[in-house]
Image (cartoon, rainbow, N blue to C red; front, side, top):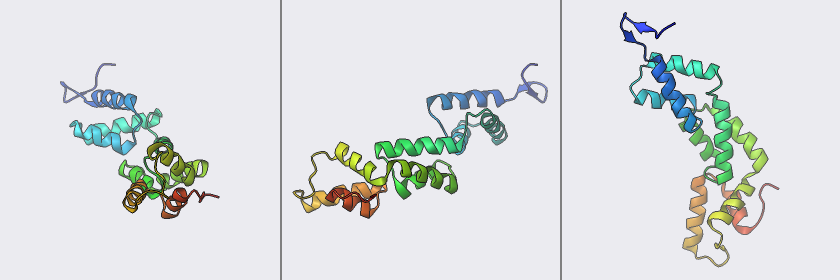
Length: 166
């Protein structure tokens, strides 16, 4: 069957778009919106991108629910983002609010905010002792944890040694 051509002599960029999208997907999973932004930045036409995204979705290479689940699990495991901050990060990557809420609720039910917080404190602030730390140091740690998306109740519990999930 040969390469499809436009107006007799110009090859369609569809195969180039497809190959570029596959190259991006081999590095890491992407949401459909992320992939669309990256391909657009490369100068591919919206029509070619839309066609390729549909093809990749049909082949199972793009799945926003799978992406949201993996991103959520990774973020919680590393303590990078939790709670509302995690939902905002998913939305920034083109995931719908509904899918983001579902992914975060599912992963949070398995891991629990206080367990993620305890692991992050042990990893990042192993020598931090709130009972002997200065007020400035306590504020610095508290603010860091808030930026990650932890609730105030979980932070207070984590710093005092009380498990808020129980």
